[in-house]
Image (cartoon, rainbow, N blue to C red; front, side):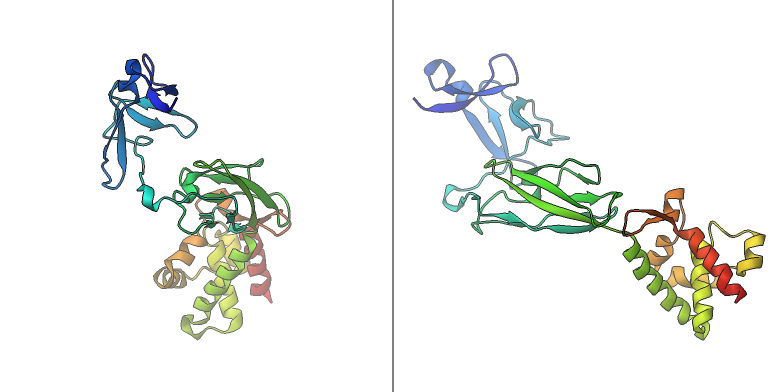
Length: 275
């Protein structure tokens, strides 16, 4: 006998039941367009509740128009439906600390449906990365050199699982790249010499933390006009080297160690200023 998905008789649960006259209405579901226009709300005739996906289980609940999360479904014409098979793979990733990226899913066949990052559940045994409900991955503080995290992605539709690795890169390379950009701004500032540009760069980096009279004596005064020039030239670099909390003082070196980067720049500033 054929089975159907049925709404509960006295609860929000759903179950597979044999079709019969007594439970006919429980097995009937109405599909209608949802608020996004291309998605569906699926309402059970017996309970008048909509099908709901909590992320880990399926049930029913009354439709929540203001927040229909989990109540909106996608439907595909059978003519266009193609299911993901086990030959698909997910590309390994490199990610920076605090960077968020979506994994690249190489689907097979190419017309398989429901193969976006959010169609997978992710599991991993560490706290170095995290995921969100869009299937995106965010890099966190790492503890070892070139540490690669193995993530298992399980396709919610087919149950097929694949593993891929995520390497969280040191923030040091980003720092070096951005110092180069800041140095070029300094080099073009009033036709500065290499030494002047280096001093301007280091003074800019220490400006918000190591800026007392004593520091000005041993490392030179902060050029506020240059600070304004950086802001007007490249606001990203200005914000990148701004200190809003103690965590902004530190970077992670390639071996996973923590460096008090701003103090390091202030010390170098003093050494070059006295040379």
